[in-house]
Image (tube, rainbow, N blue to C red; front, side):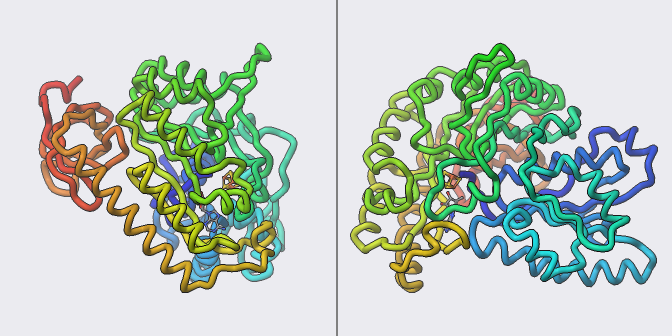
Length: 473
Ligand code: 5AD
Ligand code: SF4
């Protein structure tokens, strides 16, 4: 399951077919994205599909002829934000209408999937509600919305593959690109809405993925992150009928000219097969970083969560991954206060964290999600207890993250240049372990530059260029 929950500063990408777009009336599109990287990917693809209709990106709601809120339903807080944003958009829509300008408001993503009818009841000024599996039908929905009196709702799980209905040309994403290879989840963890909002597990075929990766590389992507709610459960069927697993796909993608770095997220411990662990040791382009959520260190809670493995499996995986790739950074997700979690269970989580040593983690208080098995359980943990456990856990995780960041200081590592730094004369980039890096000097975006890491700051590392001349390579 993917992490990085929170508003993502992603707006519509530059349209892929600028020349096609130019022939249509100029319209502006604002996409606000919450939640995981899969939503960021979906937002990019929605921008791609609307570009031929003449929609160009904007960041201003006042300017936008169409606003898409691409939403997240994973925790209560994430979905509440959608309704407050919709309240503000109602005013904008009214003000624009007074000037004779129409505004199409669409709610996409997992809140749309889970609460379609409630959205249109609470916010009747919404024109389109579309689930994650139907965004390829957006052009048709936009046309229907401008004719229809009520909202257009499309939240079914259609039989056709949306990936087959998306434009091939992808807007250039810069040096770091996302590529969705798998969607949905069949694991039904007790607390999680994903199997209900994203549907059953589905894997794209390897040929389509490789073609998209080639296109991304040709457009300047140097680092490609493969995405899926259960990305390491990926089992793509090739046109020959052969079933591929993720390690084979990674090996194939690593051969594409221009692809310098590969990552994949988010994984489930149960799907870490031997070949994938080995891949971490033998594919140099596969970055030494793995986000592997464990959620809890207590076997009792893991069973209640329906995670399908014990804490010991996770510890063994961590050891084996480090054997394969000694510098691998492990990150994770944790939930404290799942129904029935005792103080002793929480202690077991603390012990697991101490044993593994994480380079970073996301940790959350359990929040009941309607319709999930855990939501109906009577043995809720008091809010104050959840708060206390979260603070204790986060203090340890923060300490481990700081320790990890300090431990890389002094090393010379490859930094992928992603843009200019905050100060003049600086470049910004990211380390193999996803840490933001800034350095004085010049290097083109997309270059992989060896740098000496000099100091660890709370959210970044500073560095100096080890060999200025290789920046041009
Ligand atoms: N309550 C709290 N955290 C949750 N997550 C998923 N569902 C819930 C919930 N109901 C967390 C998990 C998951 C991450 C993306 O969000 O840790 O891995
Ligand atoms: Fe991840 Fe479990 Fe949710 Fe599936 S049900 S997306 S495995 S947390």
